Length: 368
Image 1 (spheres, helix red, strand yellow):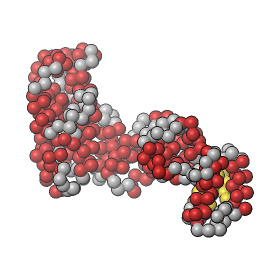
Image 2 (cartoon, helix red, strand yellow):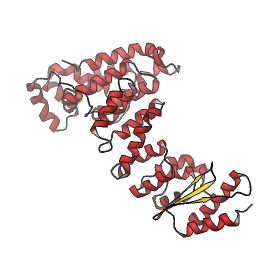
Image 3 (cartoon, rainbow, N blue to C red):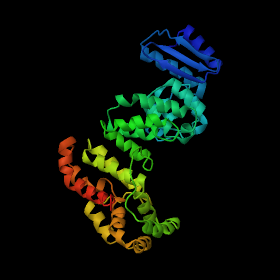
Image 4 (cartoon, one colour):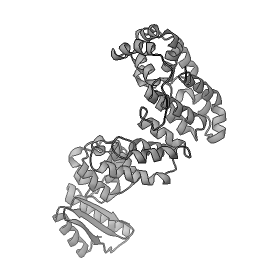
């Protein structure tokens, strides 16, 4: 089955005029083309089933753009979504009328602000927006604020905790939304505590919360500052956590611990705390139980630890606690959660021993 002569002619004219992007509205059987002069459309006139006809249309597009009539290889979905698409054919992906090709485009590392604009014209989808906002080139360009605005407006309609957290992490990147909008989002956290995690992930040292510094003395700060400047991670993290932003971080983490909604929130919170303290454990998640982390912290005797302990001896327990917290991950809740899909109050009840211990560790840094 071939395309109708009218459609074939109009499509070839469109392609001859070098469009920047092509999209297909399958419900209305309409093909749209974007060029420097604006937008054009072709209302298709199928002579067979719509799905078969659209396949023929995409074969024509692929044959013209890529020299292959087979269309975009959607079976490469996993590969392309891992960002393995070559940068030298990105523009071609926007001319195939294939949604999965646009997804592959948004996963690529080499996309530019102009190409992002074209892709967004094709498919204004929240997943595409998130993928593009994970690219620093797009964040720094004119499309960054536009994509962030879309995700901000779409946020009330998101239901999955991990998607909400990721959207907030991306929206809160510097320069994308105003301070007023940031404060407004923060106020929503009281009704939707999951929002706190987005802030913790994006702005651990700049949370919009009023906090006073910890009670560390000037003498202790003076002893730690030279060590911190010399690259001692324990000294740097101890100073950080006793600063006003550090106290805000601790209080916000404690708020989330009180009532996590589900297991994803718990796991993400543990990851956020570990990332905050990653300089103490550059190798990443050790995947240990809480008991194993406590034993490890009790036996800590590295040169950096000893130097920091000797400088502020009364903070030894805090320094060991920081090292323990730097190893948080799913390992500490696996004994409780690995064989259950519990959420809400039942999950929190099962996690109570772990949660209480974490609260004790974190509260050591408040007012002491």
